Length: 182
Image (cartoon, rainbow, N blue to C red; front, top):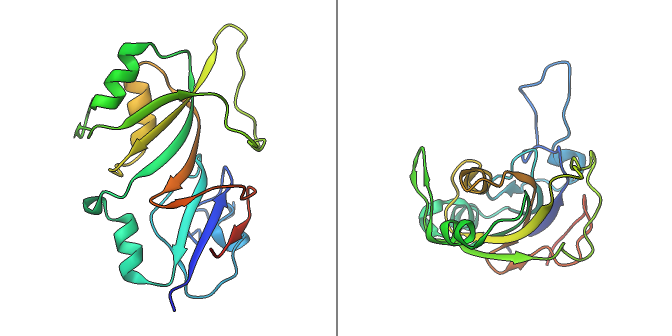
């Protein structure tokens, strides 16, 4: 029987079970939260990103989720600096040219702050003179730091990035740092 674990990764946690690159300054990893032998992360989520991760003990499922050629949709809640205008939103939706090439089209919508959003530690910097906006962005690629690079390209750097959905799995009401088996 395949095991699937949904985990709400906190900010600052590495999306792996060990940290071999920080001798003398340990950083939190998945092992600080999940003590289930034989499961592995299906894909990565940057240390400075939060939200949904899927872990499984099934190598084929892990590959189906994480391999970009499978084009599994991933939805992010993205807090950006400033207020994107119609052109910026259209550019994100149509795809933007990054250093590693054109991105595929994305689904993009401006949203209100997500409900039941947990506090981030440390908090996102706040500037009275610059508003911020929440976007929901769904991509089917998985380039390194792609969403952050896309929003920066259209002039609205990402302040906070939360993955809310991977395929049919969603964050739902899962508290930060918690996991469950659906």
